[in-house]
Image (cartoon, rainbow, N blue to C red):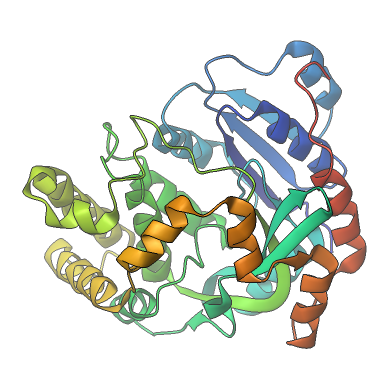
Length: 344
């Protein structure tokens, strides 16, 4: 199976070298790739010429990420779609296996593989399994309410970067792009995406290494994307009440429209229940954990987690029953080692 029925959407911001690296990698495959660049200045025309007449489409869109998601919903026209970070990788054959699963399971709307974090270091690429709770994770309730509540009760971000049916993904992107002003909390769109996907259908994590998460770069954190405003703070503090009300009302209205058998009031109540269960189930880091996270050097933190060489980490995953396409992984490792310079 090729990837011609898949679109890969890559939002990027102030990371042109990483975006170019991904564009070069995916230009060798048949998936359609849309790079949505929110950086003020575009990638140079000389570099972009390399991707003329390829499957890679570059869009310079210096607008908020939520608005770029809305634009993406207009661009995608393949049966399947997946979102990818600008500095991370998916293993192509694992994407194919996700599509195979969805094609043989009509009642599922999203499928993702297992995850491995990686970090380039002087001794090579080190790695550590991520999201161990994803093992055997699936959301299979027969009703939208059941699925949302089940997902929030045992929450792992299994939909955000999953291969999805295009109609489901477009519904979610339209929901996320509804608010014209950004939410004060940057984590809200993730919750909306996860709730929307589980509302629309079943999802699953397959035992196939798919997602390679880059732990080298810190998350974007600035005045318009303030990571200090956690989801717990945002839902609890009165100053964010208007935003929270907008979140509940808009999410309920759009999901009810997707399923025209549901009333907006009923969906809003289900979303309230799902969020309540989410907060009763998530484990917040202790004060000591937060303190150590701030003061310990990054290298020591990785050592304490037991980071190994990437192939040692992969062998551990294989022993636990995870399938790994080592040939394609080796190809990706070469790209991990080489971030292009801006004048390339």
